Amino acid sequence: MNRPKITVIGSINMDLLTGIAKMPQQGETLFGTDFAMKPGGKGANQAVAAARLGADVKFIGKVGDDALGRELLSHLKQKEIDIKHIGSESAKSTGIANVLLYNQDNRIIVVSGANEAVTPDYVAEKKDALLDSDIVIMQMEIPIETIIWCVEFCYDYNIRVILNPAPATELPNEIWERCTFITPNEEEARQLGLKQFTNKLITTLGPQGARFQESVIPTYRANVVDTTGAGDTFNGALAYYITKGHETEDAILRANAAASLAIEKLGAQEGMPTRVQVDKRLAEI
Figure (cartoon, rainbow, N blue to C red):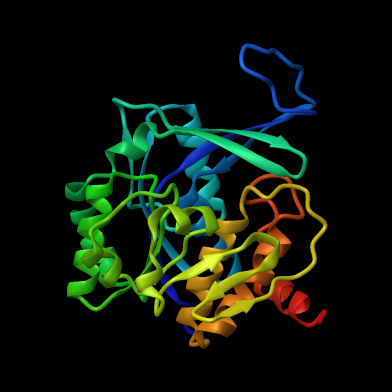
């Protein structure tokens, strides 16, 4: 069976996860409950999610020429992601995300580092990878001019695009229109005001599932440990099931099931499920 060809253009970070018993006030110092370093970055997370389900995934991005960058490249290779389009940037550090885990939720501070060097010119050098794609996934943790260039390139060559507008950033209306799907969460959708794009807008609703057009597609009950990778798992899974030929609402349902599994383990990528695991969860209802 042919594996879907998915190219992810986006961020690669190391997540610094700190558990806390309460949120500190300004100027306050608290002891954390635990700490871990886990591979992350929205782009890398979405790539791993798609690869775990069985996609043939290429990644276009950059890491720093440092220990974290080398560790993350090794990790992505172990996840069977094609890393030959990932560059090493000597002038910038590998991106990191400080993740505060509190009361089954998270607050995240991102330092972009080498992700800022994923420029239009750099991606243009990798256009053969784009042309060999069934679908392209992007997020907003790389330069906006790169996202615009990529959407226009894919539109010109009839390549489908999923754009996850996180963090929420304004784009020209013609760029939104040229995407196949736009996948904000509720807050991002509120900030961006994308209601005119109802035919391509998929809004994730956390424990309520996801909204597409007039329908809310439910999610599945989960034993929540860490919600950090939920949206990224959803996007990677959505790309996989769309390219496997599923209708949009069915692909969303399956992506919801994948996300519900991902949040049952600590770290954005640790719980990302296989296709067999998703099928088992779908059978629970």
